[in-house]
Image 1 (cartoon, rainbow, N blue to C red):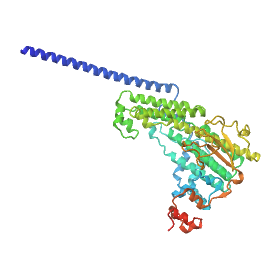
Image 2 (image 1 turned 90 degrees about the horizontal axis):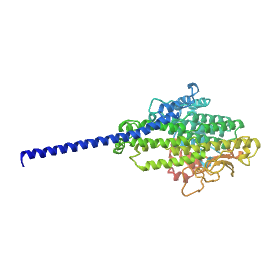
Image 3 (image 1 turned 135 degrees about the vertical axis):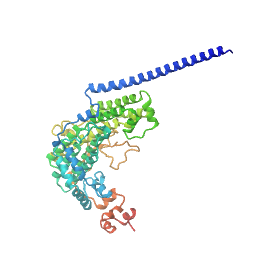
Image 4 (image 1 turned 90 degrees about the vertical axis):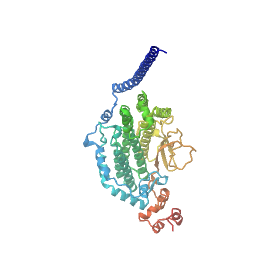
Length: 517
């Protein structure tokens, strides 16, 4: 082959390579442009969704959520007083003491007073918390609260340390109320319950679901405290009306709507974050290849954000529905959460980290409303009995004298139930399983089913016949053996083997728990 032919062949190959390279560059450019437009398509969808929220007047950013809370002036803010009280809270000394001080759920406690030894233990506990209780009762004169939040900070970095103090303070109020009820001082017991309600109300408008769940729990604790007091003594009619009004205020003030906005704002802040380091590191989660892939693939973060928004939007809409419809929507939202989480661990990587638990939050809210409405109705039943000298034949007898209407039960067709028991009456909702168990609670030793859903029992409020209230006194042995299974700690509290025998413990008791030599 001549030199000219070789040069011509090389030139053709060079032009061919150049054309191929140019085509490849064009294809890469077109691919990159396609990825850009695809990514931008989903970004525009997210931007349009957020713009729609703002056009509808909904809070989007965290500072907007904080601004949407009820404004409470500092001089009327119960939360600020309680923040001063929390450092003075003292726990019960020892595991056995904590159990005995806060034991309200045991079936054996119904209508029974504590033993002399446990009562002394509770009295010492209340004395140790005297300074905290003084501030808690001071806070009770203010009906509203709002704990400090940083509107310019990140939602996940907010100071929610007060939540533990709220629970401890409310428990303390219920213990103090029962202590006075055992002594027959119904007035002081009612004042303690009012203070406990103020502790719950201090949470105000909850801005995150974690706050909302605590608000729900405080309602349950408070209702349990009211029931315990009424198991021990009769209460004057004006105090019953006050507690019924407090329960009604708690029912009206219980809403998860702003908490859903708050969790949506948290998601909004995270989905808008740039890069995996901020996306994942801001949440305190170690980065993984799956999360890097999630952040790099076009449109995935935006599509994940839209799915997250859809779920929170559904919860926000449901929060304004009647309770029965809200319960139905809660179940549908839980199914949707599960579907999204199972779809792909990479496709919903950030969604899986956030896990809003919208369905469960709504379900718990519905149950909380019912506990409060059952309690209001039971207090009206008690007030009617005190006025007429007997239990009413039905809840309809309370209308319109004490109730505008008998509350509807979202878990069944019709209204909440009422029944006579062996020792009094019970007002109840059939609960999430929809089965009327006759006012049976999960604490009662009744065989119901081989498989039982969580909180599937009736939601109840029991009222004892007046002559049974505080009529019995438990022995120290019964209280210890009923709930505490390690007697060795008692020795540290001064209960020697000889002392325990004096208090009714048998050799078999001591041998069973490893105390008998």
